[in-house]
Length: 37
Image (cartoon, rainbow, N blue to C red; front, side, top):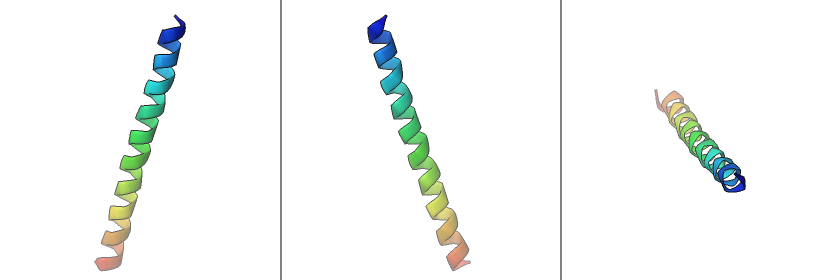
């Protein structure tokens, strides 16, 4: 059971990081688009 909690914690952390990176990249693209159009 402890291993499962540990796995879920790291899995959640990984998903959070991936979502953060995607959001960050979308923000950068929107900023570049706003500057050049």
